[in-house]
Length: 606
Image (cartoon, rainbow, N blue to C red; front, side, top):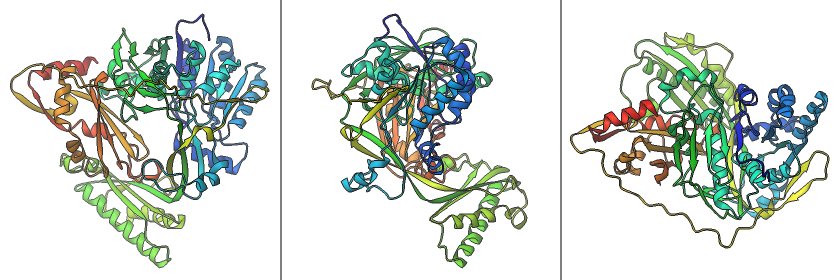
């Protein structure tokens, strides 16, 4: 515990593996941080790293952390006393720790590096299969040929590494928010039973873990921010001991921190806001308040928590055949019809070759004409574009079958219609289809260890669930009075609301938040689960659930079987549902005419 600090500043320099290296540079040079965190890992990333380790036992971690952060900035990190918490360990945390220490030694910089172990469950796979674990969503048994299997660890191992004097803490798989909660536990001495504070610290991590998604990136009202993106500010959470925090960014950077940008990110990749499950706490974020505190400063408070589950989520990945995705530009009159005709010809010819070679038909095919609004289904505008991009994809158990398809794409430029272009850059690649398999495992089966520098590794016990953990939070719907009576007018939903969509496996969530709190009852009345399901009937195969989010003046929709399998398993061009919120914001709603001026003012001024 650091009694000298009333406020702890934690910045996120990267939200995924491949994010711009300008993020850590900006925060180190201009952030005035106590902690820098970087979140590199996703389920697909784990499978990529696992394949890297299979080829080279010393690989399997994120090398960019060494080349883009430690190598150029280690001396400045040491000079400022900034501590770094990062999940760059991937599937080989020990090798990552060694690589960091090697680079520090080469520069003559004395920083203590700690590593958190225990998330990798591949050594337990046979035992888990014998135990009969079942997938969380569909209860299927554990598949053969797993590539990776990692438990989502919590924040207390990170905190204990910092307690032991670590300057840099590297983990494998942990919940993303733990990269922020761990330092806060260390700084403020929070205990395992202080669920409200653990929930609040987790929310701080959740808001900044995707980098500039909370500072103006990926925002509904992009028009007011488009000139700020070149130097968009990376987020900083300024946290205090009661759990409340202020989101900001380095002074003079682009983007914006507003109630809307932060509220959208709070809702990202969530389901029921009363039950956001993490290893250390079950979070209730349904009544959080988001209030402006000046230019590019937004305060968040009101998170609640209760005892966590005795189980830990485990995400495994496995290879289920191969896929190939190709694109071609098609121009001219009837461009969409031309593109579909080209797709039919390519698939028919490829199918004949597969039959001749006794490979069997494609397991799945997908044709999308980008520019013809096919993602809008029956709600498309109906205009006839003269320029589209054909996306053609297929899946098969054997790579050879997809090589056939890849070889037949570019011949369409000479053997089908006029106006086909884009046949350059080499043939489309054949890739493995990596599927996600998630299950729950008793925490007692997941031993966690921490090793600091050259010291002996020590065990970190999972916290017991408190017997007096607070009961599940309950929310009530408060019907606000209408802003005005009078004539009604039909407008797109985006006129009176903003929204954000995210993904988890094959599920997509869309949170819709009222621009004016007074319009929330109208959203409740018109945005029913039945209407949302009908709007996405061409994309969503499963059920649609709706959860109230009164603190954000919104509703959160969780759509099941919505992404064609999700991630790399999907053949869709938008396998993560990134555009789902944009599609929903075009839904027509009826509102009092007097509301429009007030809603538009909020839209332009945030």
